[in-house]
Length: 305
Image (cartoon, rainbow, N blue to C red; front, side, top):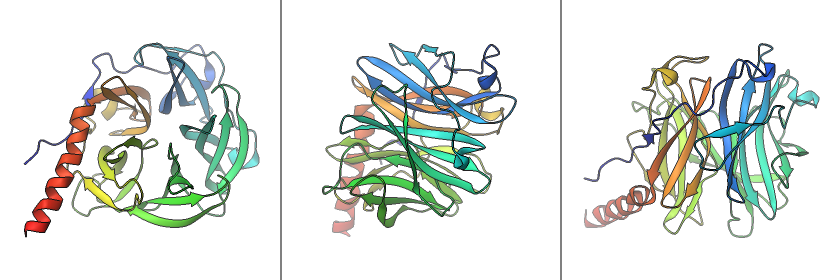
């Protein structure tokens, strides 16, 4: 039996904390999209001040561990459908643009909306892309699948995929994964950040919780041509709240990721701790690819049986 994949926390966590200097991020900083551009790592994080309105700030790093933040947010509520905040961004680079899927929160509920940027600082709204339904946890794939754009999203309690020809109109909605009753992700699941492309499949980190309502992170490997075909889904979580700043915060017992990057021989997975601070954990590419080996072993065992 293979050893379960686990993420290793950075000893310097948390890497970003609320700022008493900037009122708009004085209460919480969490659930960040993270991308690499021209050798720099950009963290686009959800921030709240005492008004509890979510805005998106930006912090920049050379090593992915130590960040300097911009004084002002780069994305703030402007439209009626964002009245209560812009939340939980996920960013994907595709076709020369950085596309940000985010949760727009207002009196009508939560809607999946999209914006795009050339430089990660100035953003152009593209509007609500999944209208007329409460939805969130949306992440755009970094490559087209069979000539079409693909996107994770969440219709409770499952993790879904949809396809589009223009990024604005999404069809062919299908369930990718569902909760597993009795396990850590037995009540609700949703996508983390955009999946990582590998030769073996889409390496996908996701969040979920069970009856105890403890948010953990899990991992799965999905087929490249048909992501609804789950090649391997690890039974054990890869990260659960253990550190004090993961167990105590604005929402206790939460680790929640909106993105990660691949650097050299490892994946860096960034996550919010207790909806209050930002942290990072890592896993080597070799450890992650053990999932592919495990999936082949599962198939072989099935054939032999």
